[in-house]
Image (tube, rainbow, N blue to C red; front, side, top):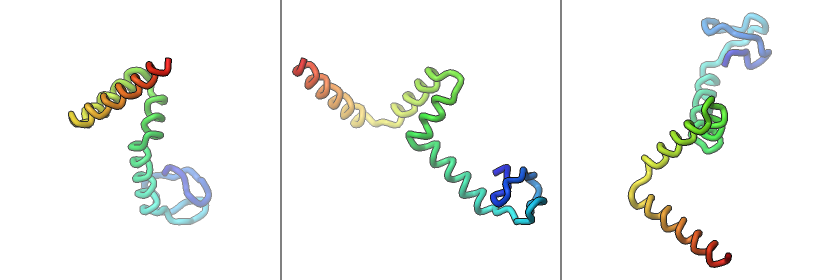
Length: 95
């Protein structure tokens, strides 16, 4: 948080009190804001923002997919394979 939560004045990290309005900066609010930012980066929305905000979208997407794949077990990989085969069989049978 680089601004005062009350008046929006730019703050210095060393200050404990806002020079413009006199309100005290809350460490609890800073900690909560940091935790919320970390939690959002772990959600799908946060991951999509990170991928779309990067300079090389393709490489960032591939890195994210590698990370997801590394977390899957063999059982999870097999389950995804079965799902894709089932969906493919349904699509081919309709066409």
